[in-house]
Image (cartoon, rainbow, N blue to C red; front, side, top):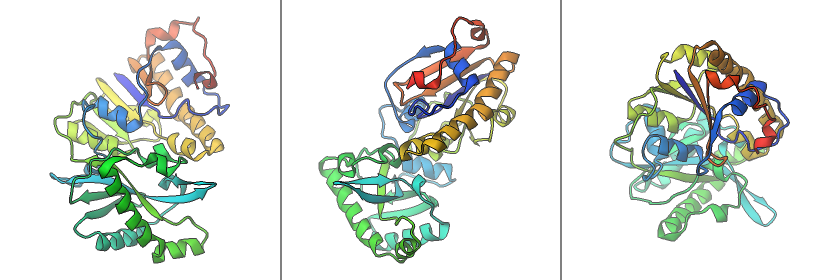
Length: 331
């Protein structure tokens, strides 16, 4: 059994957290590098679609048991834009709470306003999909990838970018005076004052299933798995639960996307706590399973860190001369 883990932003912060099992796997494993990628870009390549758009909207709908058919979909996630000195920056949905009732009311108003242009569907309160009536060939990163950046520098260019910008300006004007946002501001909560369109495209075809199963909370990963014919499973709390849920042979992928939000939002204490939780719930049990022979190999991918990957088989653990290093040494 080959266990593969993808952990975006693992080396993004010098948290001071110690993770002995993770540090040992990194030290004893065989390392490689490649081109840096986002989580979505890494998955896109992993399913054999490197030359196609990342159709996050359609994939999210597939993960929610929806049917994107032949339509063009986008993710249209609710975000909060705020002024920081002389620039406007984006705060993704991970930075605030939004109820199902609020999301439903906002989507209903936007759908009335944009009838015949786009139709929104809230897969969950912070993940919205939009069916686009006309093609909008833009490439924009997810809100977590552009969090804290100058919005103007993150906007797509060209004619499609101008259409994208005009559409968002209309949405911002409607959202500004919406009763949901007036109530949120009265409670001291961030207003949902914009959408962020990204992941535009049609549901991909002819995917290559590299893994027998994909376990994730991320709907893009689950959408890829379903379309590729792999088992799409919810992410368990721990590696022990994961090993019980999957077949005991073949390749299996777990998407451990706990660190992107605290890293993007600058929440250092939460980032450190997530590292410690990953060590206790995932890396320590997997190291024990590798030592006992229950699994044959562990591969850890950190796509944003120069496409780094670390592959360790049971025999590699005997390379005692390769001493573990603190995680800060990999940043």
